[in-house]
Length: 496
Image 1: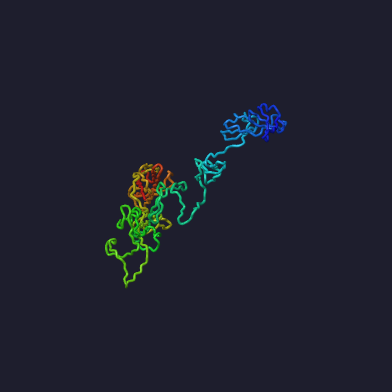
Image 2 (image 1 turned 45 degrees about the vertical axis):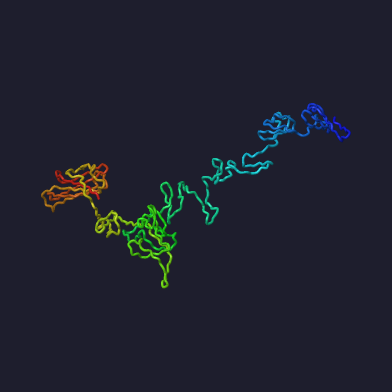
């Protein structure tokens, strides 16, 4: 039992019941009575009903990666040094991990993204790779293989707007561009010559150069050509100098770009083996020289005296740098037309149309409902020559005999000469499609009859022929009145 004892010179002395913790657990402290466990150094207060009284305050047991090494009372604290967590005993004595619960943690920044200062204030630092969600970036920005923000390789945009627009700001694009899946390398320097264009090689390497020479199609004459080296005044700004001309300002150009002008003036106005200078007529005028080479003419100064008035108007002198390319046009007449040049046949021949008198007409003409056509034949090739006395078809092998350009096959039959009155004789030949074999080509055979016979009532001779192109065969047959008579046949092939 605690009591209060008042001593001399002492205001108050508080006596507390003391003993071991085990002793405490055996007694019930009166209401308001204090008890002290000497072995646990803990103070308890009684309520008159609770055995051992009630613990006053809690105790920090220490810091360790394993907090179960500490035991104590409910609400005692321990710090898990591995996970930076503060635990309290929620039940029992803390010898089991389930006796504990975490009530706070110690926060520190893992990198510069988050800053934690000495008084535990958290601020945003520098955002680093790996701290962005790809879903938050949209379609134009992506994360690369190092988790860094980068432009997407498939940016879908309709327009690029320049941020700053003034006389000195330009939108810059890379020199290597891919357009429609084709890569282009643009030149690193600008054009140095008026009217320059971008030229590409087989590797899509672009470079500045002059456009292809414009070719004029005119009659064969040089009267309308302006030769390289011609100088004329040009009343406009120098940047509008027309194609094929250069300003006479003394500038240097490449001989490979202007070979025509280089061949005319060379390096007389300056230059080297690769480049040459243009004449410089800035603030100068021209006059008619009396020497063979105007370059060697004397240069005069124009001065005005008291009785002389001189009016001069400024102009730009330009020099012809690229020759006109003149090509003589031709014309070709082919079937069904024919033509002659000065009386000479030029059908199917390319001819300059101002080179003479050309007469054009149809290759054939119509008369009495018949069309007549002139055919120019080359020398004939003999396909067959021999006798024929059979009324049935006679086969002749033409393999290797008919040239590929053969268009006409002509045949003639000769009747043996006998005594007769020619005026009473009827002799003719024919070409009939009714006779076999039926396999024919588009080549024609024209038959003719020559000779005489002695029958006064007339002799009838029919000569027919066919050409089998597929098998290179010639078939001949003749009908006659005299079974013993032998006819002579000649077959020729003509190319047109």
